[in-house]
Amino acid sequence: MSLRKVWAIAGKELRQASRDPLSLAMLLGVPTMMLVMYGYAINFDVRHVRLAVRDLDKSAASRDLVASFVNSTYFDQVADLAANADLERLTERRVARAILAIPEGYARDLEAGRVAKVQLILDGADANTATTVLGYASALIGAANARMFLASPAAERVNRSPIDYQPRVWYNPELRSTQFLVPGLVGFILMLTAVVSTALSVVREKERGTLEQLRVTSLRPSELIAGKVLPYLGISLTATAIILVAARLLFGVSVRGPYLDLFVATLIYLIGALGFGLLVSSFADTQAMAFQVAMVTSMLPAIFLSGFIFPIRSMPLAVQVLTYAVPARYFNVILRGVILKGAGLASYGRDVAFLVLYATAVMGVAYARLTRKEV
Image 1 (cartoon, rainbow, N blue to C red):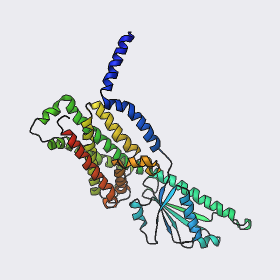
Image 2: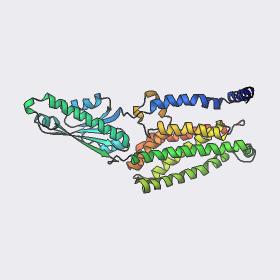
Image 3: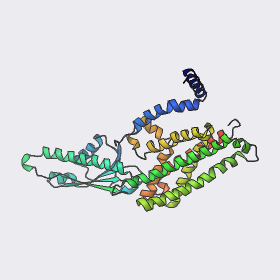
Image 4: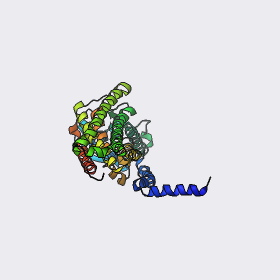
Protein backbone atom coordinates (compact mmCIF):
# COMPACT_ATOMS: atom_id res chain seq x y z
CA MET A 1 0.00 0.00 0.00
CA SER A 2 1.41 3.38 -1.02
CA LEU A 3 1.15 6.08 1.64
CA ARG A 4 1.55 8.73 -1.05
CA LYS A 5 -1.57 7.51 -2.80
CA VAL A 6 -3.45 7.30 0.51
CA TRP A 7 -2.51 10.88 1.38
CA ALA A 8 -3.48 12.02 -2.10
CA ILE A 9 -6.96 10.53 -1.72
CA ALA A 10 -7.24 11.91 1.82
CA GLY A 11 -6.22 15.37 0.63
CA LYS A 12 -8.83 15.24 -2.11
CA GLU A 13 -11.51 14.29 0.39
CA LEU A 14 -10.52 17.13 2.71
CA ARG A 15 -10.66 19.64 -0.15
CA GLN A 16 -14.03 18.29 -1.21
CA ALA A 17 -15.37 18.51 2.35
CA SER A 18 -14.10 22.08 2.71
CA ARG A 19 -16.04 23.05 -0.42
CA ASP A 20 -19.27 21.84 1.20
CA PRO A 21 -19.72 24.11 4.23
CA LEU A 22 -23.04 22.55 5.18
CA SER A 23 -21.54 19.06 5.44
CA LEU A 24 -18.55 20.42 7.33
CA ALA A 25 -20.82 22.23 9.78
CA MET A 26 -22.81 19.04 10.30
CA LEU A 27 -19.65 17.04 11.02
CA LEU A 28 -18.01 19.56 13.34
CA GLY A 29 -20.76 21.69 14.81
CA VAL A 30 -23.63 19.30 15.40
CA PRO A 31 -21.86 16.98 17.89
CA THR A 32 -20.77 19.94 20.01
CA MET A 33 -24.21 21.54 19.81
CA MET A 34 -25.91 18.29 20.80
CA LEU A 35 -23.57 17.76 23.75
CA VAL A 36 -24.13 21.26 25.12
CA MET A 37 -27.85 21.51 24.43
CA TYR A 38 -28.96 18.05 25.50
CA GLY A 39 -26.46 17.82 28.33
CA TYR A 40 -28.40 20.65 29.95
CA ALA A 41 -31.83 19.66 28.65
CA ILE A 42 -31.77 16.06 29.84
CA ASN A 43 -32.60 16.47 33.49
CA PHE A 44 -34.68 13.99 35.45
CA ASP A 45 -35.03 16.36 38.40
CA VAL A 46 -38.37 18.12 38.71
CA ARG A 47 -38.21 21.69 39.95
CA HIS A 48 -40.43 24.76 39.97
CA VAL A 49 -43.70 22.86 39.80
CA ARG A 50 -46.55 25.36 39.41
CA LEU A 51 -48.50 25.20 42.68
CA ALA A 52 -51.88 26.76 43.41
CA VAL A 53 -52.96 27.04 47.03
CA ARG A 54 -56.51 26.99 48.37
CA ASP A 55 -56.02 27.95 52.01
CA LEU A 56 -59.40 28.16 53.71
CA ASP A 57 -57.87 28.29 57.17
CA LYS A 58 -55.79 31.47 56.71
CA SER A 59 -53.83 30.73 59.88
CA ALA A 60 -50.16 30.94 60.81
CA ALA A 61 -49.96 27.13 60.74
CA SER A 62 -51.40 26.90 57.24
CA ARG A 63 -49.07 29.65 56.00
CA ASP A 64 -46.12 27.76 57.48
CA LEU A 65 -47.14 24.64 55.55
CA VAL A 66 -47.42 26.58 52.29
CA ALA A 67 -44.05 28.21 52.97
CA SER A 68 -42.43 24.79 53.43
CA PHE A 69 -43.58 23.83 49.92
CA VAL A 70 -42.45 27.06 48.30
CA ASN A 71 -39.12 27.32 50.14
CA SER A 72 -38.18 23.80 49.06
CA THR A 73 -37.61 25.16 45.48
CA TYR A 74 -39.59 22.19 44.19
CA PHE A 75 -42.77 24.28 44.01
CA ASP A 76 -43.55 27.80 42.82
CA GLN A 77 -46.80 29.27 44.08
CA VAL A 78 -48.65 30.73 41.10
CA ALA A 79 -52.14 31.29 42.51
CA ASP A 80 -54.01 31.81 45.75
CA LEU A 81 -57.47 30.30 45.20
CA ALA A 82 -60.83 31.20 46.60
CA ALA A 83 -63.17 28.60 48.08
CA ASN A 84 -65.30 28.44 44.92
CA ALA A 85 -62.42 28.24 42.44
CA ASP A 86 -62.81 25.80 39.54
CA LEU A 87 -59.91 23.45 40.26
CA GLU A 88 -60.38 21.26 37.22
CA ARG A 89 -60.37 24.24 34.88
CA LEU A 90 -57.17 25.43 36.52
CA THR A 91 -55.30 22.20 35.82
CA GLU A 92 -56.89 21.81 32.39
CA ARG A 93 -55.42 25.14 31.29
CA ARG A 94 -52.07 24.22 32.86
CA VAL A 95 -52.15 27.27 35.13
CA ALA A 96 -51.06 24.93 37.92
CA ARG A 97 -49.66 21.42 37.95
CA ALA A 98 -50.55 20.84 41.62
CA ILE A 99 -53.10 22.29 44.04
CA LEU A 100 -52.57 22.28 47.81
CA ALA A 101 -55.95 22.40 49.57
CA ILE A 102 -55.96 23.27 53.29
CA PRO A 103 -59.42 23.06 54.88
CA GLU A 104 -60.88 25.43 57.43
CA GLY A 105 -60.02 24.40 60.99
CA TYR A 106 -56.57 23.08 60.08
CA ALA A 107 -54.78 25.03 62.85
CA ARG A 108 -57.55 24.34 65.36
CA ASP A 109 -57.21 20.59 64.82
CA LEU A 110 -53.45 20.74 65.30
CA GLU A 111 -53.75 22.72 68.52
CA ALA A 112 -56.38 20.32 69.87
CA GLY A 113 -54.18 17.32 69.14
CA ARG A 114 -56.48 16.05 66.38
CA VAL A 115 -55.33 14.92 62.94
CA ALA A 116 -55.42 17.83 60.47
CA LYS A 117 -56.24 16.83 56.90
CA VAL A 118 -54.48 18.29 53.85
CA GLN A 119 -55.12 17.39 50.23
CA LEU A 120 -52.79 17.66 47.23
CA ILE A 121 -54.50 17.51 43.82
CA LEU A 122 -52.09 16.66 41.04
CA ASP A 123 -52.24 16.71 37.24
CA GLY A 124 -51.31 13.13 36.34
CA ALA A 125 -51.15 13.60 32.56
CA ASP A 126 -47.35 13.52 32.85
CA ALA A 127 -46.97 10.34 34.88
CA ASN A 128 -43.21 10.60 35.44
CA THR A 129 -43.40 14.16 36.74
CA ALA A 130 -46.48 13.39 38.84
CA THR A 131 -44.75 10.46 40.52
CA THR A 132 -41.75 12.61 41.38
CA VAL A 133 -43.94 15.46 42.66
CA LEU A 134 -45.85 13.05 44.88
CA GLY A 135 -42.56 11.96 46.39
CA TYR A 136 -41.55 15.56 47.03
CA ALA A 137 -44.90 16.39 48.66
CA SER A 138 -44.80 13.28 50.85
CA ALA A 139 -41.30 14.18 52.02
CA LEU A 140 -42.33 17.77 52.82
CA ILE A 141 -45.39 16.64 54.79
CA GLY A 142 -43.24 14.07 56.57
CA ALA A 143 -40.73 16.76 57.51
CA ALA A 144 -43.55 18.99 58.81
CA ASN A 145 -44.88 16.11 60.93
CA ALA A 146 -41.40 15.46 62.33
CA ARG A 147 -40.96 19.12 63.30
CA MET A 148 -44.32 19.16 65.08
CA PHE A 149 -43.52 15.91 66.86
CA LEU A 150 -40.19 17.21 68.15
CA ALA A 151 -41.66 20.59 69.10
CA SER A 152 -44.40 19.06 71.26
CA PRO A 153 -43.78 18.20 74.95
CA ALA A 154 -42.54 14.67 75.51
CA ALA A 155 -45.59 13.82 77.62
CA GLU A 156 -47.95 14.76 74.78
CA ARG A 157 -46.18 12.89 72.02
CA VAL A 158 -48.14 10.07 70.45
CA ASN A 159 -47.24 7.65 67.74
CA ARG A 160 -49.17 9.31 64.96
CA SER A 161 -48.79 12.01 62.29
CA PRO A 162 -50.38 15.39 63.11
CA ILE A 163 -51.03 16.05 59.39
CA ASP A 164 -53.01 13.55 57.33
CA TYR A 165 -51.75 13.95 53.76
CA GLN A 166 -54.24 12.86 51.09
CA PRO A 167 -52.94 12.97 47.49
CA ARG A 168 -55.38 12.82 44.60
CA VAL A 169 -54.25 12.39 40.99
CA TRP A 170 -56.44 13.60 38.13
CA TYR A 171 -56.58 12.41 34.50
CA ASN A 172 -54.27 9.44 35.12
CA PRO A 173 -55.00 8.09 38.64
CA GLU A 174 -52.96 4.92 38.14
CA LEU A 175 -49.99 7.01 36.91
CA ARG A 176 -49.58 4.72 33.92
CA SER A 177 -46.62 5.83 31.84
CA THR A 178 -48.34 4.83 28.60
CA GLN A 179 -51.04 7.44 29.20
CA PHE A 180 -48.31 10.06 29.24
CA LEU A 181 -46.01 8.62 26.56
CA VAL A 182 -48.51 7.77 23.82
CA PRO A 183 -49.69 11.36 23.13
CA GLY A 184 -46.06 12.52 23.08
CA LEU A 185 -45.15 9.74 20.67
CA VAL A 186 -47.87 10.93 18.29
CA GLY A 187 -46.26 14.37 18.06
CA PHE A 188 -42.77 12.94 17.69
CA ILE A 189 -43.68 10.38 15.02
CA LEU A 190 -45.68 12.85 12.94
CA MET A 191 -42.95 15.49 13.05
CA LEU A 192 -40.26 13.03 12.03
CA THR A 193 -42.17 11.31 9.22
CA ALA A 194 -43.61 14.52 7.76
CA VAL A 195 -40.31 16.38 7.69
CA VAL A 196 -38.22 13.50 6.36
CA SER A 197 -40.70 12.36 3.70
CA THR A 198 -41.21 15.86 2.27
CA ALA A 199 -37.52 16.78 2.34
CA LEU A 200 -36.47 13.56 0.59
CA SER A 201 -39.23 13.90 -2.00
CA VAL A 202 -38.03 17.30 -3.21
CA VAL A 203 -34.31 16.53 -3.00
CA ARG A 204 -34.90 13.34 -4.98
CA GLU A 205 -36.26 15.50 -7.78
CA LYS A 206 -33.14 17.69 -7.52
CA GLU A 207 -30.77 14.74 -7.80
CA ARG A 208 -32.58 13.35 -10.83
CA GLY A 209 -32.79 16.74 -12.52
CA THR A 210 -36.57 16.50 -12.85
CA LEU A 211 -37.20 19.50 -10.59
CA GLU A 212 -35.88 21.88 -13.23
CA GLN A 213 -37.99 20.12 -15.85
CA LEU A 214 -41.06 20.72 -13.72
CA ARG A 215 -40.13 24.39 -13.38
CA VAL A 216 -40.23 25.00 -17.14
CA THR A 217 -43.72 23.53 -17.49
CA SER A 218 -46.91 25.53 -17.10
CA LEU A 219 -47.06 24.62 -13.41
CA ARG A 220 -47.08 27.55 -11.03
CA PRO A 221 -44.68 27.31 -8.07
CA SER A 222 -47.61 27.19 -5.66
CA GLU A 223 -49.15 24.32 -7.62
CA LEU A 224 -45.87 22.41 -7.62
CA ILE A 225 -45.42 22.83 -3.86
CA ALA A 226 -49.05 21.96 -3.13
CA GLY A 227 -48.75 18.85 -5.29
CA LYS A 228 -45.68 17.81 -3.30
CA VAL A 229 -47.25 18.46 0.09
CA LEU A 230 -50.82 17.20 -0.23
CA PRO A 231 -50.03 13.47 -0.66
CA TYR A 232 -47.85 13.44 2.45
CA LEU A 233 -50.46 15.44 4.35
CA GLY A 234 -53.03 12.76 3.55
CA ILE A 235 -50.60 9.98 4.46
CA SER A 236 -49.71 11.67 7.76
CA LEU A 237 -53.38 12.15 8.70
CA THR A 238 -54.02 8.49 7.92
CA ALA A 239 -51.02 7.55 10.07
CA THR A 240 -52.51 9.65 12.89
CA ALA A 241 -55.77 7.72 12.72
CA ILE A 242 -53.89 4.40 12.76
CA ILE A 243 -51.80 5.51 15.76
CA LEU A 244 -54.90 6.54 17.73
CA VAL A 245 -56.66 3.25 16.97
CA ALA A 246 -53.55 1.29 17.96
CA ALA A 247 -53.22 3.34 21.15
CA ARG A 248 -56.81 2.48 22.06
CA LEU A 249 -56.53 -1.23 21.28
CA LEU A 250 -53.01 -1.90 22.57
CA PHE A 251 -52.57 0.55 25.44
CA GLY A 252 -56.09 1.52 26.41
CA VAL A 253 -55.45 5.22 25.66
CA SER A 254 -58.68 6.70 24.29
CA VAL A 255 -59.48 10.21 23.15
CA ARG A 256 -61.65 11.88 25.78
CA GLY A 257 -61.97 15.25 24.05
CA PRO A 258 -63.56 16.37 20.74
CA TYR A 259 -62.21 14.55 17.69
CA LEU A 260 -62.76 17.65 15.55
CA ASP A 261 -60.50 19.71 17.79
CA LEU A 262 -57.85 16.98 17.67
CA PHE A 263 -58.09 16.90 13.86
CA VAL A 264 -57.73 20.68 13.54
CA ALA A 265 -54.69 20.79 15.83
CA THR A 266 -53.07 17.86 14.01
CA LEU A 267 -53.72 19.46 10.62
CA ILE A 268 -52.05 22.73 11.65
CA TYR A 269 -49.12 20.86 13.17
CA LEU A 270 -48.62 18.74 10.05
CA ILE A 271 -48.71 21.75 7.74
CA GLY A 272 -45.89 23.26 9.78
CA ALA A 273 -43.93 19.98 9.72
CA LEU A 274 -44.37 19.57 5.97
CA GLY A 275 -43.34 23.19 5.45
CA PHE A 276 -40.20 22.55 7.48
CA GLY A 277 -39.47 19.54 5.30
CA LEU A 278 -39.70 21.79 2.24
CA LEU A 279 -37.37 24.27 3.91
CA VAL A 280 -34.82 21.54 4.59
CA SER A 281 -34.99 20.45 0.96
CA SER A 282 -34.19 24.01 -0.19
CA PHE A 283 -30.82 23.81 1.60
CA ALA A 284 -29.84 20.19 0.99
CA ASP A 285 -28.58 18.94 -2.36
CA THR A 286 -28.50 15.21 -1.61
CA GLN A 287 -30.93 12.83 0.03
CA ALA A 288 -28.30 11.82 2.57
CA MET A 289 -27.79 15.42 3.63
CA ALA A 290 -31.54 16.08 3.71
CA PHE A 291 -32.05 13.05 5.93
CA GLN A 292 -29.31 14.10 8.36
CA VAL A 293 -30.55 17.69 8.63
CA ALA A 294 -34.16 16.54 9.03
CA MET A 295 -33.21 14.11 11.80
CA VAL A 296 -31.14 16.63 13.75
CA THR A 297 -33.57 19.54 13.42
CA SER A 298 -36.85 17.67 13.89
CA MET A 299 -36.34 14.37 15.72
CA LEU A 300 -33.98 15.46 18.51
CA PRO A 301 -35.85 18.65 19.50
CA ALA A 302 -39.15 16.74 19.41
CA ILE A 303 -37.72 14.28 21.96
CA PHE A 304 -35.62 16.45 24.25
CA LEU A 305 -36.97 20.01 23.96
CA SER A 306 -40.71 19.50 23.72
CA GLY A 307 -41.54 18.34 27.24
CA PHE A 308 -42.23 14.88 25.79
CA ILE A 309 -39.95 13.19 28.32
CA PHE A 310 -38.08 15.85 30.29
CA PRO A 311 -39.90 18.69 32.14
CA ILE A 312 -39.19 22.03 30.48
CA ARG A 313 -39.33 24.00 33.73
CA SER A 314 -36.43 21.95 35.09
CA MET A 315 -34.16 23.00 32.23
CA PRO A 316 -31.77 25.98 32.40
CA LEU A 317 -33.31 29.27 31.30
CA ALA A 318 -31.31 29.42 28.05
CA VAL A 319 -32.58 25.98 27.01
CA GLN A 320 -36.13 26.89 28.03
CA VAL A 321 -35.97 29.81 25.62
CA LEU A 322 -34.98 27.42 22.80
CA THR A 323 -38.03 25.25 23.47
CA TYR A 324 -40.33 28.09 22.41
CA ALA A 325 -39.21 27.47 18.82
CA VAL A 326 -40.13 23.76 18.96
CA PRO A 327 -43.68 23.18 17.64
CA ALA A 328 -43.88 19.76 19.31
CA ARG A 329 -43.82 21.57 22.67
CA TYR A 330 -47.21 23.15 21.95
CA PHE A 331 -48.66 20.17 20.11
CA ASN A 332 -47.89 17.87 23.06
CA VAL A 333 -49.76 20.21 25.41
CA ILE A 334 -52.81 20.12 23.11
CA LEU A 335 -52.60 16.35 22.63
CA ARG A 336 -52.49 15.60 26.33
CA GLY A 337 -55.26 18.08 26.98
CA VAL A 338 -57.61 16.65 24.36
CA ILE A 339 -56.72 12.97 24.75
CA LEU A 340 -56.26 12.68 28.52
CA LYS A 341 -58.23 15.59 29.98
CA GLY A 342 -61.12 15.78 27.52
CA ALA A 343 -60.46 19.49 26.92
CA GLY A 344 -61.12 21.43 23.73
CA LEU A 345 -58.95 23.83 21.76
CA ALA A 346 -60.51 26.77 23.59
CA SER A 347 -58.35 25.88 26.60
CA TYR A 348 -55.16 26.04 24.55
CA GLY A 349 -55.56 29.18 22.45
CA ARG A 350 -51.93 30.25 22.93
CA ASP A 351 -50.59 26.88 21.81
CA VAL A 352 -52.84 26.81 18.74
CA ALA A 353 -51.82 30.38 17.87
CA PHE A 354 -48.15 29.43 17.93
CA LEU A 355 -48.72 26.40 15.70
CA VAL A 356 -50.55 28.60 13.20
CA LEU A 357 -47.75 31.19 13.33
CA TYR A 358 -45.08 28.51 12.94
CA ALA A 359 -46.83 26.84 10.00
CA THR A 360 -47.37 30.18 8.24
CA ALA A 361 -43.78 31.36 8.75
CA VAL A 362 -42.14 28.09 7.74
CA MET A 363 -44.33 27.65 4.67
CA GLY A 364 -43.64 31.25 3.65
CA VAL A 365 -39.86 30.91 3.94
CA ALA A 366 -39.87 27.51 2.20
CA TYR A 367 -41.98 28.90 -0.65
CA ALA A 368 -39.64 31.88 -1.06
CA ARG A 369 -36.56 29.67 -1.23
CA LEU A 370 -37.98 26.97 -3.48
CA THR A 371 -39.26 29.49 -6.03
CA ARG A 372 -35.89 31.20 -6.42
CA LYS A 373 -34.26 30.60 -9.78
CA GLU A 374 -30.96 29.38 -8.37
CA VAL A 375 -32.46 26.69 -6.09
